[in-house]
Amino acid sequence: MTMRFMRPENTYMEEVSSLVWLWVFLFGVFYFVFKGVWRHAFLSLVLAVITAGFSWFVYPFFARTIMRNHYLRMGWVQVVEQV
Image (cartoon, rainbow, N blue to C red; front, side, top):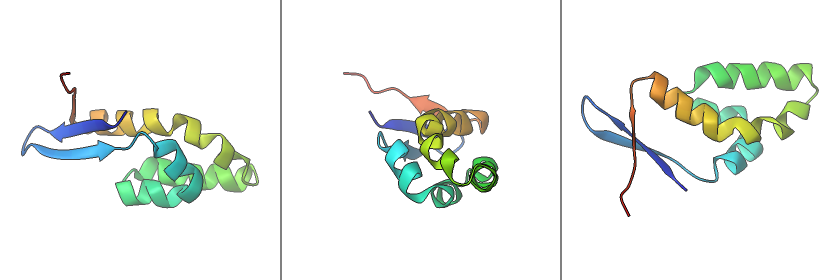
């Protein structure tokens, strides 16, 4: 399920796809750079070098939580849609 986050200051919405694990698996560091998650872009690059690429198979499992925590730390509010 797609997660949506809203910036309270100007009601700008940002979405995190339910396929975020796939995008991180395919694009790795570049996905985090594109989304502006610099901490994990740097960390995933360092871990890939240290583990000879093995971390690329582990990091996607945590991508959804990483993105959620990133937006919440920045003060964004998660929007829950009513059914």
